[in-house]
Image (cartoon, rainbow, N blue to C red; front, side):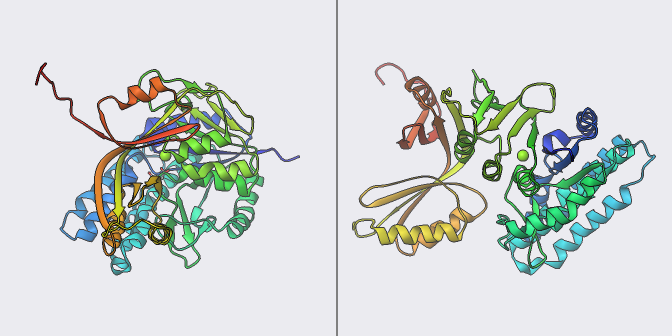
Amino acid sequence: MKKALKVYKFGGLSLKDAEAIKNVYNILKTHPNERLIVVVSAFAKVTDALENLVAAHMRNDGSSDAYFDIIKKRHFEVIDDLFDGEVNIKPEVQSVLDDIQFQLDKHRDKGYDLIYDQVVSRGEILSSVIVSAYFNAQGLKSNWVDARKIVITDDIYREGWVQWDETTKNAHGLIAPLLDNGGVVITQGFIGSATNGYTTTLGREGSDYTAAILSYCLDAESMTIWKDVPGILTADPKLFDNITKLDLISYREAIEMTYYGAKVIHPKTIKPLQNKSIPMLVKSFLNPEGEGTYISDEVEDHYPPIVALEKEQALVQISTRDFSFVAEHHISEIFQHIADLRLQVNMMQNSAISFSVCFNDVDDKVDRFAENMERKFKVTLIRGLELITVRHYNETTVESLKSGKMLLLEERLRNTMQMVVKNVPVIERRRGS
Ligand code: ASP
Ligand code: MG
């Protein structure tokens, strides 16, 4: 009988330098003879650097060469540290770098989002080529697969939606035979291609989602995301104290948490896994023996308060100019614009004459939305806000989170409370003033 398939995803932090990549290899080494797909992100910070490169190129202010050089140097340094000169993959990596230049020049007038995907996607190509070569040099047979030949999406750049039938067919046709032949398959997260042949991306942090897509298409036994934290925590340890690890959570809780902005997994990751009852593990690449968090159908009904914080939020308040009600047909029109821009609504509320909606303030999407709305409504746009969500909240937690913040919007459901807040500087007040 064939061994069950596992899918591992390694993010940018687990590939931040040569040492980190060696650590990834050590993790794989302890699982010999596994049928394994390894999905990798770009090296840490490379996607940001590529975004900067695209922006600089489009501004055409002469700063793009500097960004390009940073990206090149970063990869060549890792190669020098990894290979001690015996394996020469610089020419291969150089050809990907040349391709980045080529893509920048070729698509200049095809719009920002298209050019973004053609260029930013190369971060994953670079990392996977280097990591795969390293595995092979260590004697671990590694089959490099171009995810763009597998994951097919629609042609909405930067947020491609997966075409499942074609993707499943490709995964069976191209990946399954490689797994049967032995060795690991290594491929890129985050990227795919549209049926028109252009590269697309699945949205920032989308590598987790790729791992789930492949797990789904090939009926994996389990999927593991390797992170720099011990598992899924009750809040981001960089921002809060008194954090605990959740040992076991349900798909439902995971989907709710990520939907509300818990950064630990990409929000689209859970659905394909849940649909085929594929358990997901979140484990630490710093402590691979640790238990991590196990996400499955098993339901734990008592969760502690779980806090997610999203920064860079924009609140758009829309009201009628003539004091008439914001009626159903207005809301429907507002949502049509939101859907067209593929903006994600994080929170919304309406009163008689106004409708408030909170989004992640990414790119120029919120500006585009506000401009559209201004044609018809009175619009106020407030930026630089935070959205705090507490699942399984209690008053103590909520009160402590509110301190030092100005509350702009609040909503409570049975299990979830959300608030949009502005950080207010602490002003010392003298008694009587
Ligand atoms: N490299 C991409 C990003 O940084 C995808 C990912 O890491 O998941 O957004
Ligand atoms: Mg990530």
